Image (cartoon, rainbow, N blue to C red; front, side, top):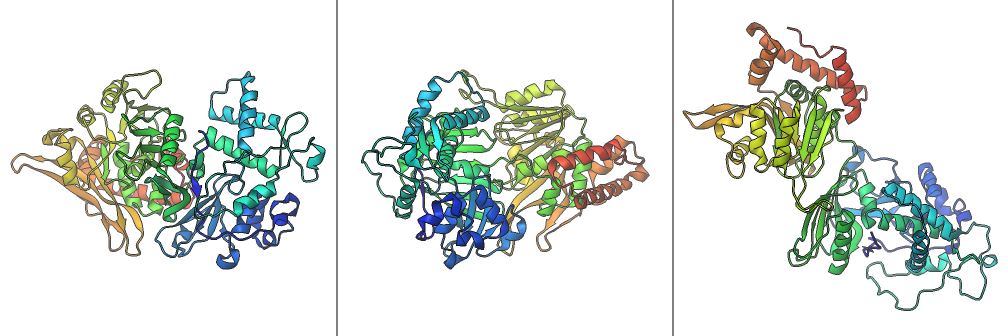
Length: 620
């Protein structure tokens, strides 16, 4: 992506700085502020000196030195006025800063280029890059290869000053030398609340060696290299947001700041903002080109996947978005949340998880249903660890979000018309689901059922293919209504091919926190032609008073006693023993949790070992 014009709007007045302390690499350890820092912060500053520059302009006398965390835990979410810095990469840090006048606190990315006005250097660097790369024989394909080429070329076209080196000994002629100090001081003297117009004067000359290499300080080199990789290979100004593992959603509503939903600090507003419509128009156009889904006035809406797997929706132009182009990104986690993490967050509990474990292991079909942002996909993904490890799994999605731990996993993604390079046809989820039935899967996972693919999914259930999916409905009654209406049109007498419906929601607790809870786990019993109604039984129900889960279905589970017990060959007088198996598996999960096997992959491998050792065999 090319250089992108977004502004930094700091929520505090920057302090005046002492040049000699800020910009002399030798003086970092002699800085009074450095000596005041905790040990972990000193290590970060040595690795990334621009962090000390940021701390020098931050009013520590007013707000105090920020707390430094190597990683965040949920213990810090209760802080009333968080003043916290944490890393999201080797060179990028995030400052969470309180706003006493708003429910949303500030999110400030601290990048190597944050305080370095290298705009006059970049055109010279880019010109030399073009000249050099034109003669370059390699043809990099992946982003990692492009990054490595860019780093190599940067080393070829620049000379980086060492602290002891004299710039006058490297240059010839009477050209005015523009050093780093002057450029940064000019930046610090800029009004942070009102963007000044770019100076139209000719760019200053950049000092060069007799061989023609650009002479840069280490700070300038770091800034330029970071910006080139960030903007030309990665996702530009979004890079710190996408690298932050604690972000769930990134939203830009148009002109104004970028908003985020944080796993720890909930809703935050970023110091990065767009001031004019044309700025964000330019940004979303370049972003769409980067993901090979170009925007036009005829086709102004894009649903796509970013290179890291995150899901993005873009709406382009002021004709349909009055505040300017907008975009929303749902972050992709490299490691999905496990069922034990959901238990930690109290989304569910051990008994619910154990019940689902048995049901899924023995081929029951399941929907996770709820409103938008209720955590449906997260829960669906978490319970895939309960599927038998020897099974063949097929996933079908319009945007890839599911991660299945099984080795025998076929991942299929629908393709819109014209979304592929050189392709004009489309492949719908209906097409993929129909094709999946010929692939002999043990389970079919559908990212979301919302259209004609629903009828194929129920056809698959009728022929013995268990299906798991998410669905938009806030209750079992509404789910049945939607299934039996356009465009899905399932006959109501066929709905009981679906065995389990989990109703999940985002609910607000008395302390004001928004949390996700499985409100109920329901077994679908069947259609009564005499009354015209459909019966279902709630196995588990969330109790909002105690924030715990009740088990009203104990002793009356049709799936456990009639379906699974029958599959196991249990005699009628022993079928009640199946509930002991639920309790046993709940204890196994609790022990795994206490032993530290909390991660998605760790839990799956332990469940696989436990099954291989025969510990899950149900005694008859």
